[in-house]
Amino acid sequence: MKKRIFLLLCVSLSYLSLSVKAQSNAFAITDLRVVTVSGAIIERGAVVVRDGLIEAVGENVKPPADAVVIDGKGLTIYPGFFDTNTSLGIARPVASPSPTPGVSIPIIPQSVPQQLSASNYPAGLRPDLDVVEQLRAGDAQFESQRNNGITTVVTVLRDGIFNGQSAIINLAGDTVSAMIIKSPFAQHITFRTLQGGVYPTSLLGTFSALRQMFLDAKRLQEWKKIYESNPRGIKRPEEDKSLEALFPVIEGKMPVVFNANTEIEIIRALNLAKEFNLRAIIAGGHEAWKVVDRLKTQNVPVLLSLNFPKRTSAASEEADPEPLEVLRFRAETLKCAGRLEKAGVKFAFQSGGIQNYADIWANLNRAIENGLSKEMAIKALTLNAAEILGVADRLGSIEPGKIANLVVVRGDLFGKDRNITHVFIDGKIFEIKQQKEEKRPSGQSALTLAINLTGVWNLNIEAMGQTIPATLNLTQQGNTLTGTFQTSITGTSTIKEGRVNADTFSFSLEVTLGGTPTEVTFNGKLSGNQISGSIQSQQGVFSFSGTKTP
Image (cartoon, rainbow, N blue to C red; front, side, top):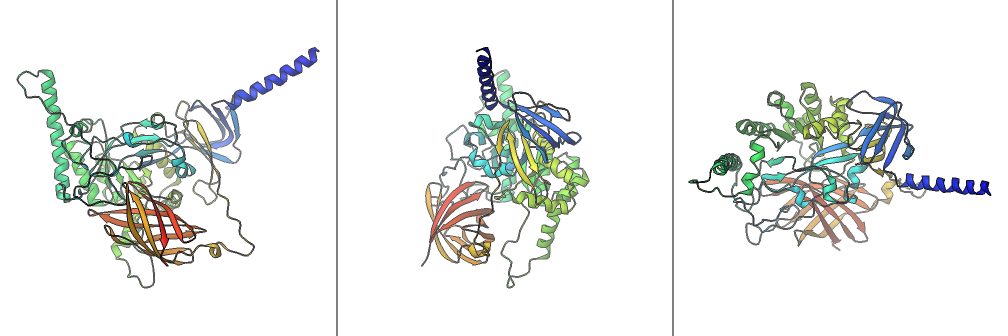
């Protein structure tokens, strides 16, 4: 009888142990290579995660009894990777009232409606706009980024000259507040004009408007300080949310991210930063290598875009040869990261609007082939990014006490055999399922299974609560797609980087609105004589559907 009771007790304890472990927030990844980034590589060690934080890391770390153990034999673990300039997580935009009656802007709408508020400035000159108010939570929307090891991003609205205040977020969380690492992070500025005849309508006017707003912010801040110290006999200063949003900027408490790719754009940003003593960060930076001395002198880091320039039209025997300066620009861009490393300019990476995140790895390899070291490539994805963003005390390296954002990889991180197996975000584990190659009948290639999209397609694009008609004229040769895209507002654009795979297709093109060229990417699927899918831009994601013309 006692023996039976003892056995029942053992069974009960076993089930209790399993139940506790199943509910545990602890994980131990053992017997793997640990790239801490902040210190020496541990060739054979373990990492313990508990309650969203890194609890222990080292060679002789033992898995806790309550931890779920992951055998890491043959694996390498890295800190989670950053994408330092995105518009991820932003809810689908609502249309803004158009400055010109009857004029709507497809594909690239205003991200934020014109609001009735304590601001004297039009849409596009609203530094008070906060991306957090536009964010939506949910893990599913970030699957592509997580599958490529991205755990943390800077996200910001894309419209206007002042893009507003950005936030640093993790790419997982049931609520927006659970995703936020730091908010607000920075003020973002793009050198462009406003549309619909709204001032400024020229770049000269843009710089004049920026300077005037910084000067007005300084004046208002001084006025408010004087008034608050003794209001008697002093006219009450008006409230202005837009100017007040610049107070931490002119005080040096909040950085300014300038979207600038060319040498002249970067110099203009540096000049403006010097004039108003701003904490500048350059985003884009394709020609940053030309101004390394200025960047070092002013201690300005770079969020370097991995969206390298491509041909503006599909290559063909009949196409005119590209100008030498264009070819040189493309070649020199690949060398920029290596040159910044050599010059000692701190930089991190951003996707730069790349829609297929797998392309990040191909482009990183191109940068490595052109002078960037693998060690710096890893650092630019992790600790450098965390330091530039001001969150290195909690992210960017594998150290006890930091947030458990981790990437587990089988094979060489920069090799074709790279296989990301697990991603941890705030200690939450995501198992990355590898896409299996489609089974085909014996002797049949992928090419023979490919769809045929050649023809004219009438599209309907859902954007800004409107249905916008468009026309696609496609030519397919093998798995290559070329052609044109046309709407009554954007005119005709040439398709580039067109690809067909099984029953899906993708291509990118450039549209110009209000004098500003912007790249967008189509991802679609064919079903019978109908196509449907999404259009992605830095401003948001929109759906389309279409039917082939008989």
